[in-house]
Image (cartoon, rainbow, N blue to C red; front, side, top):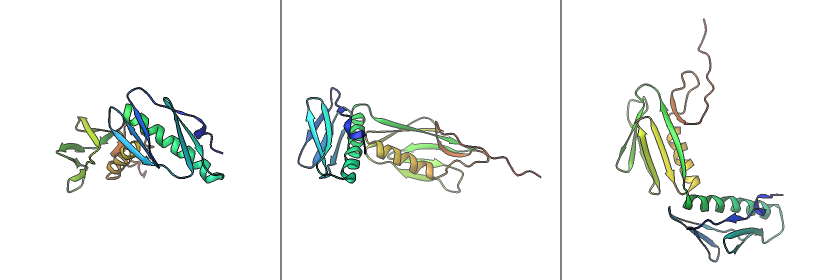
Length: 177
């Protein structure tokens, strides 16, 4: 039985939550997010707290209420503080450059890799080898970071590739004679 749904979601100052018929909208200083609420989940708002419960009996509805609680909690956190992921390019000649709404990556291929940046995502580059991805939607920030990493994942022998800054890559020994 999921106990995640039993924890209420606190709504901080500056964040406005609107409950419509089947749609929950969250508006804050960083942006707006909305989600369609499943029929098995009941959401109630009491002052600055959101509470989640089930409309029907069964394991699926209990699991869905916990899932929606986590999603709404991430939405509230996203519009108030935002989310970010940091990638590091490791390798000789590996670099990135922002050109308009595109990220141009040189990753050791014979051609440059061009990545189209989604509208709600901001990318900052403190240096040529560090990419900081920021946004309101936690899922979208993680997906963009995973898509960029997938162009050249870190390899286990020299550690070259695109990796998360806090990622540990287990190194293998080279072939011995």
